[in-house]
Length: 284
Ligand code: PAF
Image (cartoon, rainbow, N blue to C red; front, side, top):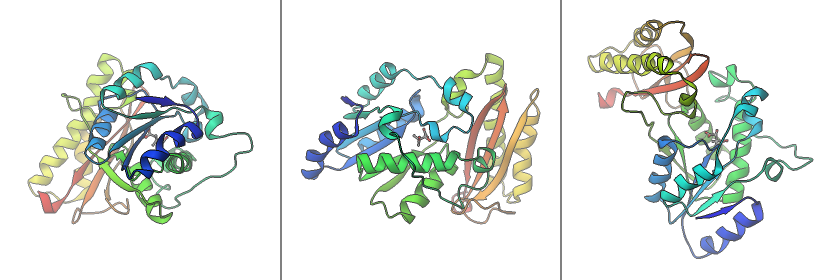
């Protein structure tokens, strides 16, 4: 695996491969890799000839500068994991390489950015859309994978790729859970043993809602309530939102009649945990 940190080195590596007709696949990350990221890199193998990952902790998507400063990654560890997954190129640029002096362009996906994470983290999605556009322009992938765990981010990228006519196929990477049900996230490392046990109430609630859905329950408020009840059963829960939305528009729905997602964000020990589950009447 080649590791490069400049735009010109990334382009020099990729240009001859693209010219030779190779299909380039891309997984952008912010490092601190876990099995969820690695499963995306693995999926990429089935869809591309040349596999590219980026590790860039993007300052413009942190609405709280303290979170940015506290975000620690080990490039050596992450590079080792990607090498084992058969990644061909790791692009790990500096902040100055991506945002040189004088940088002033942003990309905003207006509607998808408004609710949920967008409302709670002003500017976050403009940071994401902008950096992903820059990375897409550098790597020029044929295919890119984004995980379903950050479902609103995935919707935003799909919308942006469609609207800006990027010639890139976006593949949805399945959400990966630990054996106990907790959705994998770099943030899980910040939980104490007890916090981790309490955090399981989130996935337990989602599984309860899915079971009720299988039994025929379609009312969104009642399905949401099963998740809320589960989370409220642990000490000091803070629920940011629990909302059944249409998969396409992310608009809240009163009843599940088409493909929907139940989006959940709760804080355990001050750690914001995102989770979601699919609800599809055609598949139940
Ligand atoms: O999901 C992430 O890790 C980031 O938001 C992304 C897509 C790499 C952009 O910085």
